Length: 292
Image (cartoon, rainbow, N blue to C red; front, side):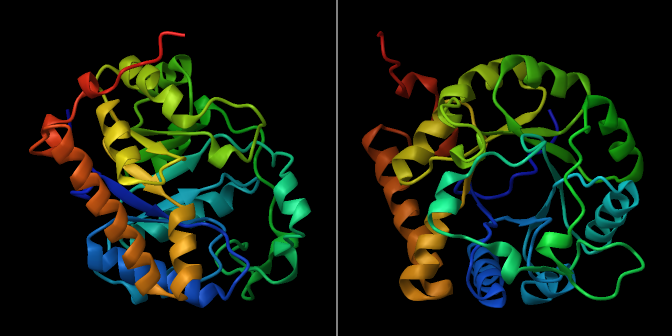
């Protein structure tokens, strides 16, 4: 098996979330904290800050890029080559958004990103100005397994698929020679009543048979949640909403740092109370499944 591309000793990765706040504050505080903590940071296609600014903010940070496949193939190629040249270390392909789900909470909260979000990297090669959210290229609903070979032909970056929830898709990921899987239900925002990420994890881990790394995204709120995910076979976990809470609580990197410290301390406590002296000793024997 290849060397792990998930380098966080705590098994924690930060992912970028869209927020209706100052874009500069959001991205810079995430990045500074991630770099200081030695944690990887996932930058979205829909980032509100330019990729060059993200790199400049935390030049020593470990960065992956989350790509939402666009209908403009040349734009996809441009983005992939750009992040590779800027030193991003992996390409995360979102596969669970062929179209946006019915996000009722966004409607209820009157969240309107179209009014103030400028996508500085999501623009055609001929465009110089940032692209407003509402003018962006549509997500490519036709993207399928066979398209992965094209992506692999234009980049040397490891390719990770985000949004896998079934054994069948995990086996196809192995067949198509990707480097990793993120078990994720997109925060439960895409499809009502979809399986929780943690409930799909063991099936996906078993399906890949150690041929690639499997990560977990969604539902991580405590250090105990991290322990459970690692016990079920995840190599590391992603954090999204808790980081936003930290940002809102103390308006910046100190809030993010506090959230990470809370989860880290809870994780170490959970390890101690389950008799695990190291992450290597965490295994599925710690988990008792319901007999119902």
